[in-house]
Amino acid sequence: MYHNPVMLQESLEGLSLREGGTYADLTFGGGGHSRAILSALKGGRLIALDQDPEAHAHAPLDDRLTMVHGNFRYITQYLRYLKAIPLDGILADLGISSHQIDEGRRGFSTRTDARLDMRMDPQMTSDAARVVNEYTVEALEAVFRNYGELPSARKLSASIIRIRAERPIATTGDLVLAVKPFTPSGQEHKFLAQVFQALRIAVNDEIEALKEMLLQVPSLLKPGGRLVVIAYHSLEDRLVKHFMRSGNFEDKPEADFYGNRSLPFRLITRKAVVPTAQEITRNNRARSARLRVAERI
Ligand SMILES: C[S@@+](CC[C@H](N)C(=O)[O-])C[C@H]1O[C@@H](n2cnc3c(N)ncnc32)[C@H](O)[C@@H]1O
Image (cartoon, rainbow, N blue to C red; front, top):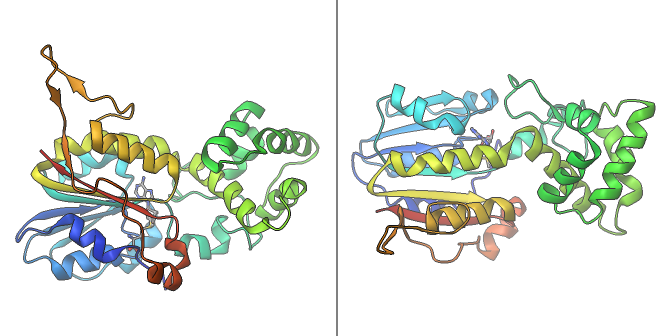
């Protein structure tokens, strides 16, 4: 299976589909959410985006669906070209698909030895080999600390710098060996997952892409239009939470001269929605998911 969609029912409830509405799924992946939207939507239109061309092979045949190969950081341009603004709802199910992890050759998997790639879009010029072999020690440490939440970030980056001075770290196997001495005992899998996650977020510039996309959302949605985001990392979830609550990432709502606050959204979920225990048993990859919904005012 390409990808097991996470919190499918909760996502549909969050979107609160309107008959004849226009929707955007910014992260098509295996198309689980898009298919569910198309089968629940009466008439209407769905624009589905993914920066990974492999995702596009699984698009269903449906006249209401338009597939776009691209990064959601350019969402306004695509939607303008498709004359799809304003929208009734936007869904973003962040991160990577099971297919991307399971395809060992792409370099996302801790279990298969492959070239250090990790690009979601193969047209990108920078890959994980570049991050590991060319970033300064400070930049590498920041990647491991901020994106991997690794307490050993400083030691890890210093060790990588020493190793790469002798020979390049070219494959995922080389990387696994390089970080091995820092593995907390009994936590090998979690530790490697954090190291790989950190590099993947850096390679794909995921945090900046998310911020750029969120900043465009208020001008894309109709009043009453819904934004549904599923995040798998606390840094991403915090950005989404602050943006939905305040319209910026500092969580400081703008106020006019008289102190009247101008908020772009009404919160539909006050707290993040998490998957049920049954869903996590069925699909362990759902365990870190946090879903939030906001409505354009
Ligand atoms: C978690 S999967 C989505 C799974 C999908 N909801 C499903 O049901 O199959 C995330 C997908 O988003 C894509 N993606 C991640 N960041 C993106 C971005 N900035 N722009 C476009 N696509 C992106 C990835 O390539 C991946 O296929």
